Image 1: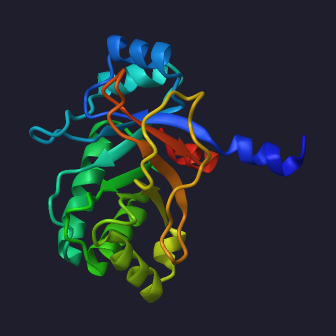
Image 2: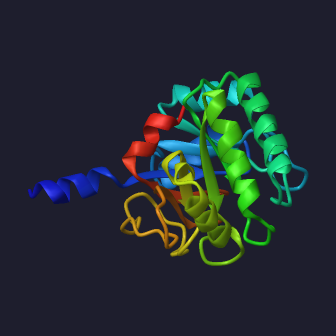
Amino acid sequence: MDRKVVRALARKIWGVDSANPVDQELYERVKNQLGLPKYWGRYLTGKTKVSTGLTREEIQFIRNKGVKVLPIYNVMTETIGYEEAQVAARNAIFHARRLGIPKNTMLFANIENDYQVDVNWIKGWVETINPSGYRCGFFHDPVKGEFTKAYSQAVKEDNEVANQSVLWSADPETGASSERKAPRFKPTKPNCKANVWIWKYGRDAKKCPIDTNLADERVLTYLF
Protein backbone atom coordinates (compact mmCIF):
# COMPACT_ATOMS: atom_id res chain seq x y z
CA MET A 1 0.00 0.00 0.00
CA ASP A 2 1.22 3.50 -0.84
CA ARG A 3 2.77 5.31 2.14
CA LYS A 4 0.57 8.35 1.61
CA VAL A 5 -2.53 6.15 1.76
CA VAL A 6 -1.32 4.49 4.99
CA ARG A 7 -0.65 7.88 6.55
CA ALA A 8 -4.10 9.16 5.55
CA LEU A 9 -5.78 6.12 7.10
CA ALA A 10 -3.80 6.52 10.31
CA ARG A 11 -4.92 10.12 10.66
CA LYS A 12 -8.66 9.38 10.84
CA ILE A 13 -9.36 8.71 14.51
CA TRP A 14 -13.03 8.23 15.48
CA GLY A 15 -14.46 9.49 18.75
CA VAL A 16 -17.55 10.95 20.37
CA ASP A 17 -18.66 13.67 22.75
CA SER A 18 -21.67 13.91 25.02
CA ALA A 19 -23.45 16.28 27.36
CA ASN A 20 -24.43 13.31 29.52
CA PRO A 21 -22.00 11.54 31.84
CA VAL A 22 -20.39 8.34 30.63
CA ASP A 23 -21.56 5.30 32.56
CA GLN A 24 -21.59 1.59 31.76
CA GLU A 25 -24.93 1.76 29.98
CA LEU A 26 -23.97 4.63 27.66
CA TYR A 27 -20.54 3.19 27.00
CA GLU A 28 -21.99 -0.19 26.03
CA ARG A 29 -24.59 1.39 23.75
CA VAL A 30 -21.95 3.40 21.91
CA LYS A 31 -19.52 0.48 21.66
CA ASN A 32 -22.12 -2.04 20.49
CA GLN A 33 -24.11 0.16 18.13
CA LEU A 34 -21.56 2.61 16.75
CA GLY A 35 -18.00 1.60 17.57
CA LEU A 36 -15.30 1.96 20.20
CA PRO A 37 -14.29 5.63 20.47
CA LYS A 38 -10.63 6.48 20.92
CA TYR A 39 -11.57 9.68 22.78
CA TRP A 40 -14.67 11.05 24.49
CA GLY A 41 -15.41 14.76 24.72
CA ARG A 42 -16.88 15.82 28.06
CA TYR A 43 -17.50 19.09 29.88
CA LEU A 44 -15.27 20.26 32.70
CA THR A 45 -18.22 21.57 34.68
CA GLY A 46 -22.00 21.54 34.51
CA LYS A 47 -24.17 24.09 32.75
CA THR A 48 -27.89 24.26 33.53
CA LYS A 49 -30.05 22.55 30.90
CA VAL A 50 -26.98 22.03 28.70
CA SER A 51 -24.44 19.62 30.17
CA THR A 52 -23.44 17.62 33.21
CA GLY A 53 -19.89 18.20 34.43
CA LEU A 54 -17.12 15.65 34.68
CA THR A 55 -16.18 13.93 37.93
CA ARG A 56 -13.01 12.11 38.90
CA GLU A 57 -14.98 8.87 38.99
CA GLU A 58 -16.22 9.37 35.44
CA ILE A 59 -12.71 10.16 34.21
CA GLN A 60 -11.43 6.97 35.81
CA PHE A 61 -14.24 4.97 34.21
CA ILE A 62 -13.52 6.38 30.73
CA ARG A 63 -9.78 5.86 31.00
CA ASN A 64 -10.20 2.33 32.33
CA LYS A 65 -11.94 1.52 29.05
CA GLY A 66 -8.86 2.63 27.13
CA VAL A 67 -10.57 5.83 25.96
CA LYS A 68 -8.98 9.28 26.23
CA VAL A 69 -10.82 12.28 27.69
CA LEU A 70 -11.25 15.43 25.60
CA PRO A 71 -12.01 18.29 28.04
CA ILE A 72 -14.41 21.06 27.02
CA TYR A 73 -15.20 24.33 28.83
CA ASN A 74 -18.60 25.83 27.99
CA VAL A 75 -19.62 28.10 30.86
CA MET A 76 -19.87 31.28 28.85
CA THR A 77 -22.48 32.77 26.53
CA GLU A 78 -20.49 35.72 25.19
CA THR A 79 -16.90 35.63 24.06
CA ILE A 80 -15.99 39.30 23.92
CA GLY A 81 -12.96 40.98 25.47
CA TYR A 82 -9.52 39.99 26.71
CA GLU A 83 -10.39 40.09 30.41
CA GLU A 84 -13.49 37.95 29.87
CA ALA A 85 -11.30 35.37 28.14
CA GLN A 86 -8.87 35.42 31.04
CA VAL A 87 -11.70 34.72 33.49
CA ALA A 88 -13.01 31.83 31.37
CA ALA A 89 -9.53 30.38 30.88
CA ARG A 90 -8.69 30.57 34.59
CA ASN A 91 -11.95 28.83 35.42
CA ALA A 92 -11.18 26.09 32.88
CA ILE A 93 -7.70 25.65 34.37
CA PHE A 94 -9.14 25.51 37.89
CA HIS A 95 -11.59 22.76 36.97
CA ALA A 96 -8.95 20.82 35.05
CA ARG A 97 -6.70 20.84 38.10
CA ARG A 98 -9.62 20.00 40.40
CA LEU A 99 -10.32 16.92 38.30
CA GLY A 100 -6.70 15.82 38.24
CA ILE A 101 -6.27 16.44 34.53
CA PRO A 102 -2.53 16.70 33.86
CA LYS A 103 -0.71 19.53 32.14
CA ASN A 104 -0.14 19.27 28.39
CA THR A 105 -3.82 18.31 28.01
CA MET A 106 -5.82 20.40 25.56
CA LEU A 107 -8.71 22.44 26.96
CA PHE A 108 -11.30 23.40 24.36
CA ALA A 109 -13.36 26.57 24.60
CA ASN A 110 -16.88 25.77 23.34
CA ILE A 111 -17.88 28.70 21.10
CA GLU A 112 -21.34 28.22 19.62
CA ASN A 113 -22.26 29.91 16.35
CA ASP A 114 -24.70 32.32 18.00
CA TYR A 115 -22.06 33.72 20.37
CA GLN A 116 -20.50 37.10 19.86
CA VAL A 117 -16.73 36.66 19.65
CA ASP A 118 -13.88 39.07 19.03
CA VAL A 119 -10.15 38.98 18.42
CA ASN A 120 -9.35 39.96 22.00
CA TRP A 121 -11.22 36.97 23.43
CA ILE A 122 -9.35 34.60 21.12
CA LYS A 123 -5.99 36.05 22.13
CA GLY A 124 -6.94 36.14 25.80
CA TRP A 125 -7.81 32.43 25.85
CA VAL A 126 -4.55 31.46 24.14
CA GLU A 127 -2.37 33.74 26.24
CA THR A 128 -3.89 32.53 29.51
CA ILE A 129 -4.18 28.80 28.84
CA ASN A 130 -0.70 28.20 27.42
CA PRO A 131 1.42 29.63 30.27
CA SER A 132 -0.50 27.34 32.66
CA GLY A 133 1.03 24.25 31.07
CA TYR A 134 -2.23 23.19 29.43
CA ARG A 135 -2.84 23.44 25.67
CA CYS A 136 -5.59 25.51 24.10
CA GLY A 137 -8.25 24.63 21.60
CA PHE A 138 -11.44 26.10 20.17
CA PHE A 139 -14.63 24.29 19.26
CA HIS A 140 -16.34 26.47 16.65
CA ASP A 141 -18.51 26.73 13.56
CA PRO A 142 -16.26 28.00 10.72
CA VAL A 143 -19.20 29.04 8.53
CA LYS A 144 -21.95 30.41 10.77
CA GLY A 145 -21.20 33.07 13.36
CA GLU A 146 -18.25 35.33 14.06
CA PHE A 147 -15.49 32.94 15.07
CA THR A 148 -13.63 32.62 11.77
CA LYS A 149 -13.35 36.37 11.28
CA ALA A 150 -12.12 36.91 14.83
CA TYR A 151 -9.68 33.98 14.69
CA SER A 152 -8.24 35.04 11.34
CA GLN A 153 -7.66 38.56 12.65
CA ALA A 154 -5.99 37.18 15.78
CA VAL A 155 -3.65 35.07 13.65
CA LYS A 156 -2.88 38.09 11.47
CA GLU A 157 -1.94 40.10 14.56
CA ASP A 158 -0.02 37.26 16.25
CA ASN A 159 1.05 34.13 14.37
CA GLU A 160 1.53 32.32 17.68
CA VAL A 161 -2.26 32.09 18.00
CA ALA A 162 -2.22 29.59 15.13
CA ASN A 163 0.95 27.86 16.31
CA GLN A 164 -0.31 27.32 19.85
CA SER A 165 -3.94 26.35 19.32
CA VAL A 166 -6.01 23.59 17.74
CA LEU A 167 -9.39 24.03 16.09
CA TRP A 168 -12.33 21.66 16.35
CA SER A 169 -14.57 22.33 13.36
CA ALA A 170 -18.34 21.81 13.37
CA ASP A 171 -18.74 22.00 9.59
CA PRO A 172 -19.84 20.36 7.42
CA GLU A 173 -22.43 18.25 9.21
CA THR A 174 -22.75 15.03 7.25
CA GLY A 175 -24.80 13.19 9.88
CA ALA A 176 -23.83 11.05 12.86
CA SER A 177 -22.58 7.60 11.97
CA SER A 178 -20.86 4.52 13.24
CA GLU A 179 -17.07 4.37 13.13
CA ARG A 180 -17.26 2.05 10.13
CA LYS A 181 -19.39 4.50 8.13
CA ALA A 182 -17.48 7.65 9.07
CA PRO A 183 -16.72 10.01 6.16
CA ARG A 184 -13.30 11.03 4.93
CA PHE A 185 -11.63 13.67 7.08
CA LYS A 186 -12.66 16.93 5.40
CA PRO A 187 -13.52 19.61 7.97
CA THR A 188 -14.13 23.17 6.84
CA LYS A 189 -11.12 25.36 7.61
CA PRO A 190 -10.62 29.13 7.93
CA ASN A 191 -8.73 30.98 5.20
CA CYS A 192 -5.68 31.44 7.39
CA LYS A 193 -3.08 29.33 9.13
CA ALA A 194 -4.88 26.91 11.46
CA ASN A 195 -4.44 23.47 13.00
CA VAL A 196 -7.88 21.98 12.28
CA TRP A 197 -7.35 18.63 13.95
CA ILE A 198 -10.89 17.65 14.99
CA TRP A 199 -14.15 17.59 13.08
CA LYS A 200 -17.62 17.13 14.61
CA TYR A 201 -19.26 15.72 11.51
CA GLY A 202 -22.43 14.39 13.15
CA ARG A 203 -24.74 15.60 15.92
CA ASP A 204 -27.36 13.81 17.99
CA ALA A 205 -26.93 10.22 16.88
CA LYS A 206 -30.26 8.37 16.75
CA LYS A 207 -28.97 5.29 18.55
CA CYS A 208 -27.17 7.09 21.42
CA PRO A 209 -27.18 10.61 22.93
CA ILE A 210 -23.76 11.50 21.49
CA ASP A 211 -22.12 13.42 18.65
CA THR A 212 -19.56 11.80 16.36
CA ASN A 213 -16.13 13.14 15.49
CA LEU A 214 -13.01 12.46 13.48
CA ALA A 215 -9.58 13.67 14.54
CA ASP A 216 -6.06 13.90 13.26
CA GLU A 217 -4.11 11.33 15.24
CA ARG A 218 -1.76 14.06 16.51
CA VAL A 219 -4.47 15.36 18.82
CA LEU A 220 -4.31 12.18 20.90
CA THR A 221 -0.96 13.34 22.29
CA TYR A 222 -2.79 16.23 23.98
CA LEU A 223 -5.73 14.29 25.39
CA PHE A 224 -5.78 12.64 28.79
